[in-house]
Image 1 (cartoon, rainbow, N blue to C red):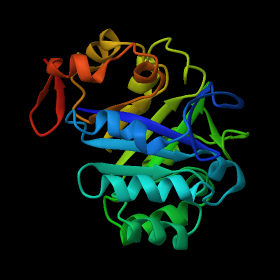
Image 2 (cartoon, rainbow, N blue to C red):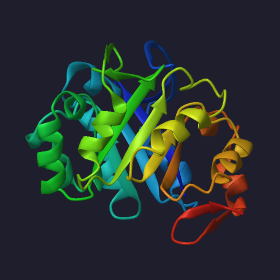
Image 3 (cartoon, helix red, strand yellow):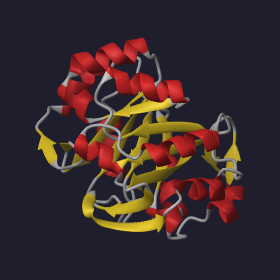
Image 4 (cartoon, rainbow, N blue to C red):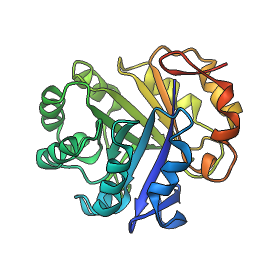
Length: 250
């Protein structure tokens, strides 16, 4: 199981939102590359990079910081990137820069044919983001909600060569109130893809709780405010994590 630090970029700064509200954010650093530098030497295997402004306007925005991060990481750590990626040109652009995985949300939800096409073109390199609030899917940078029968949707995409699916509970995101394990169980049992859970991670007790489920398709947990606030100290507590090709809680 991977522990995946989140780097959310707004105005080329590293920030954290609360419940997905673009007007409620705290700036942790004006140099996101320095943030990554804090963790890259502690056996972190993947980073989660989101262009928040790009998600709103529908195209990449914070390329200055994004390119700096990609150049700094090189091939040391895997990188998954999302936010405003809504056409093939942008997907190709990021892969050409050296990104390992591209995260699709709005475009993939609204255009299933597009998701099918790009996933087969880039087999197991596309990640689908399902940002949920009361089981409604958020799109356009979490500004709007889209009515969709999730279970019918899952049946349609089960044969697509997608690397994984990220489930984010918007109501818990940035709150440190704990992962929504019930939502994860309801959603994950209906799909055959590896799962990444996000939204509300509080501390290592939370990680142990989700790990105890022994879900074979659990790929990782995204951690944001929990590591920025010190609730989870990667440097101090990394010994709790055994590496067996993936991260597992000992």
